[in-house]
Image 1 (cartoon, rainbow, N blue to C red):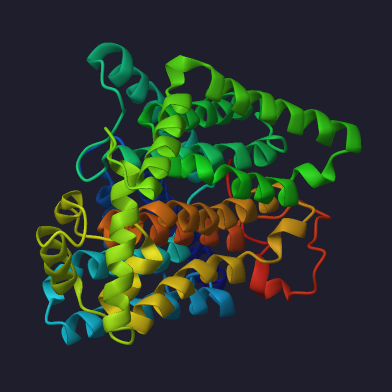
Image 2 (cartoon, rainbow, N blue to C red):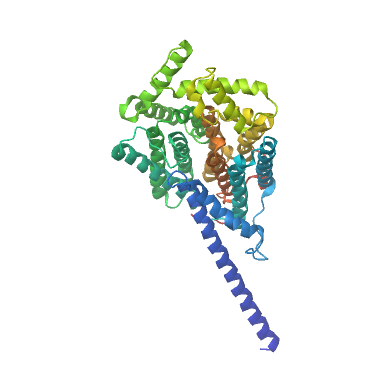
Length: 461
C-alpha cells in the first residue's frame, strides 16, 4: 500500500466521522425542536403563559438557524417553497400593518405583544425548516393536550365546583373552551394518520382520548361560540374523510354524530341545554326591551350596536383601541348603551373589532390571515395519503374554527389568539410540506409537487 493509499483511507475515515458527527448534531437539534412542537401543542391551556413557552423555544433555535450558526455547510435547511415564502411574507406584512396602524393612533405599546407573537412565529418557521422533528411531536402533542385539558376541566367541575371550567389568565372560559375544542378536533383529524402507522392501536387510543378530553373541556367551559362552529367543522371532516366512506357508513356515522350532540344537549350535567336556553331567553328579552337576569348575549348585542356607530364615524382608519374603549364607556355612561358595555375593551367580534380600531386596513389584515390556510392547504383534502390529508384537514380546521370563534368574541385582540393561530399554522404547514408521503399516494389536483410536499424527507413516527 502506498503512502497515497494510506492518506486516502485516512481521509475517508475523517469524512465518515464528520458525516456521523453532522448527523448526530442534526438529530440533537431535531430533538430540541420536537420538544418545542410538543410544548406548543400541550402547554397553552395548562400553564400560565403556556402559549408563549413552546413558540419562544422554537424561536430561539430559529435565531440560531437564521444566523447559520448551526447549519452544516453541506446540509442546507429545507426549502420554504413558493407557498412557504408566501406564508412568511404575509405574516411579516401583517406585523408591519399592525405597527403602522398602531402608529397612526399613537398606541404602539398596545400591539407590541401581538407583533412579538408574529415575530416568534416567523422564527419558529425557520427553526422547523432547519431541523424538522418527527411528526409524533404534533400528533402526540394534541393528544396529550386534549387528555390533560379534559382531565383538568373535569377536576374543576367535580372538585372545585366551578360552573364553567377555565384556564389561567387570560384564558378565561371562552378562550379556554374554544382552544380545547380545536385541540380535540385536531385529534379526530389525526385518527386518519394513526390508521396508517405501525403502532396503530396505541395512536388510535391516545388520539381518541385526546378528542374526548378536548370536547369535554369545551362542554364544561360552557362556551357557546365553540358549539356554533361544529356544523362548519363537520363539513371539513365530511370533505376530507367521511365522503370517502360508503353510503351506508356515512349515514351511520352522521346518525352517531347527531346522537352524540343530542346527548350533550339533553344530559343536564353538561350544562349545554341551560346555556342555550339562557342565550335564547336573553335575545328574546333584548328584542322586547325587557331586562334579564343574565346579560352575556344582550351585552354583545349592545357592543355590536355601539361598535357599528363608531365604524360609521371612521370607516377608513378606525379609532384605535384606546379611543374605541373611551367612546364606548362614554356612550354607556350617557345611557346610549347598556352599562355592562363599559368593562369590555374589544367588540366581541373579530371583524368588527379590527374595523373599528384599524379601519379598512385592519379588516384586510384579518381576512388575509383567515384566507391564508385555504391557499396553503387547498389541494390536501383530495390527497390519497391519509396522513397528508389529516394535516390538510387540521390546517383548514384552524381558520374555520377561528372564524366562527371570532363571531362572538375577539380572539385576535389577544396575543394568545394571534400566537396560537400563527404558530399552529406554521407547525401544521411545515409537516404538511415536508412529511413523507406514502408510496403511490398522490393528490388529485394539478398543483405542482413543490407546492404540496416533499416525499424524500424521512420522518420517524
